[in-house]
Amino acid sequence: MEFKTKYSRILGHILHAYGQYYRMISTTHPVTLTFSVTGRCQSRCKTCEIGDYWHAGKFADKPDLKLDEIEKIFRSLGKIYFFNVSGGEPFLRKDLPEIIHLAVKYLKPAIIHIPTNALLPKRIEEACREILENNRGKEYIVPFTVKPSIDGIGKKHDDIRGVPGNFNKLEETIIRLKTVEEDYPEFHLELGTVISKFNLGDLDEIEDYVHNLGVQSYRNEIAEERAEFFNKGKGITPSAEMYEKVMARFSAEIIRHLPEKKSLTKLTESLRLVYYDLAVKVLKLQKQVIPCYGGITNLHLNFDGQLWPCCVLAYERPLADLRETGYDVQKAIRSRQAKQTLRFIRKRGCYCPLANQWYSNILMHPPTLSRVILNYFFIDSRKKRK
Ligand code: SF4
Image (cartoon, rainbow, N blue to C red; front, side, top):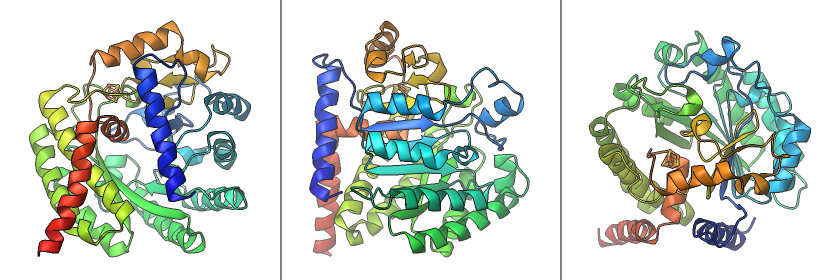
């Protein structure tokens, strides 16, 4: 997809979101759809209880959406920009390549992103290759990123993820996915860390490890208490002060390397700098510091057919159950329940630093967006002055 087309598409989503927010438009046209494709997960993470719930059979009455159900939902939703797959563990679904095929057919995403616990190295590699082969020969080639989680080094990782031997599997997965990266230029391997109170002191070690592996892309996000993870009240999130210290270090690193980045990466990194700042403010002030457009710019589809504004509110404040509304997202978004949930968010009844959502919120808020632009040019001009 061409650069110009990408930006005009994002602009279209933003304009639509304004129209929906100010109640001039009653349809949804989100920038991002996150789809938790399954509730199954082999991990027993300290930061998430989905694995515990699944092992205890608590999802027995919540079967995963089947392909024909997913197709109806995607068809009713139409185009999006970012397609984030989530779980449980997405690669436990043997039909994951078919799900991606349906997403490309109906949602026409510009970017596909899949995290993994890396416990099934061979299956992960095979599924990635199948997805990439399926996408070849389409009208456009979709960039596709897979992000194995790395929450510590060696046994520390296994302890946090609750599975002995997970780190060895992670290393095998990385080796396998590097071969995929060599074969498919549209494929990207990224590693990601969930920063929680369990690994705050290990971030340097993890970063050095990732750097020595030669993996180009590394992201981290703050551990959050989410209704989706059944971890509310568990106290896993670092304090705002601790988080601020860590983020200040990450920001300094970004600023140091920003001038040498290509313009698109530089823009993304400028956005991340503003996000880090906002995330600290949200944690400190415990409120939405700019309006949140959860349920408008971003939607979250759960494996059982529930449509959520975000994974933080999740089961507590759903928009609709698509199994009960004929799998029609446009109809669901006009339901009384959806309107109540959107009103709750608009009245700032909730807050959180959820990265995906806050990137969209920044795009929707011109004063904050202008800080991204200033970052972009300020850092560039500072380099020129040196
Ligand atoms: S502020 Fe957080 S919890 Fe509230 S809607 Fe936005 S993303 Fe969800």
